[in-house]
Image 1 (spheres, helix red, strand yellow):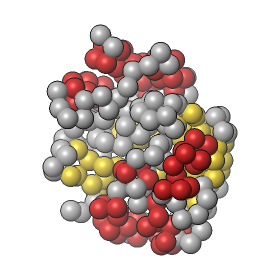
Image 2 (tube, helix red, strand yellow; image 1 turned 90 degrees about the horizontal axis):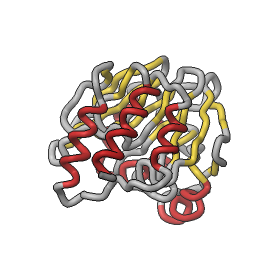
Image 3 (cartoon, one colour; image 1 turned 90 degrees about the vertical axis):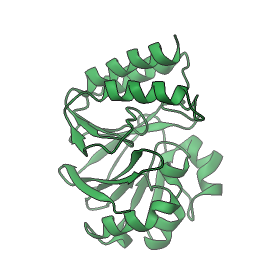
Image 4 (tube, rainbow, N blue to C red; image 1 turned 180 degrees about the vertical axis):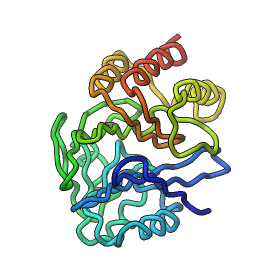
Length: 242
C-alpha cells in the first residue's frame, strides 16, 4: 500500500495510508523545520511505506522529534524503528506517557516529557502541549497545538471512516458522528470514553481557536476549528452519554 503525501499547511505534510480492512486512513504528520518533527509514528506494519514517504521530503535520519497523543500502536508503535533510523530522534510527550509506558515499552532512548501548557520550538514553529486525559482516550492523552499557524494535532478526535480527501473545509463533525455510532455496534465499542471532564477539555481545545485540525483518521479540516470542536462536544455528549 502506498502512502499519500499532501502539504496541508506551510511545511506541514500529511502522510496518509488507507487500510482497506479498517476502512479508514492512518495519518502521520511531518513538520519540516530546523529540527524536523514527526507526529504519530504509525504502526510497525506501516513503517516501510511511511518511511518512503518521509524520504521524499527530507532525509529520515534528520528527524529530531517524534510526538504523539498517547500510548497506542498507531500513535507510537513504530517509535523504535524511527529512532533506529534517526540517531537523534527523541520522543516528546506527556509525563504520564513517558513514565508509565513509552520509556519502558516503546522507546530506544528516554523520552522528553512536557508539562501541561509547556511549549517547545522546532525552529520556525512553536508547539504547546495540553494534557487531556481520556480525550480522545487513554489516561496519558494529550494534544499538540502549533501556535504560529494555528494547527491542532487532534489525534483520534473527528475520526472519519472511509478513503477520504486529505484536506476539507466541509463538515467533518457529521462524518465523525456516523463513525462513533458505527463503532458502538462493533467489537471496538467503548473506544471513546465519556467522563465528567470531556466537555471542559473539548472547550479548552476550542479556546485555542485552531484554523486547521490535523486529524489522525480521515480528512484534516481547514476552517473554524473552534466551532467544529464545540459541535463535536455536542455530538459526543449525545452519542456517548445519552
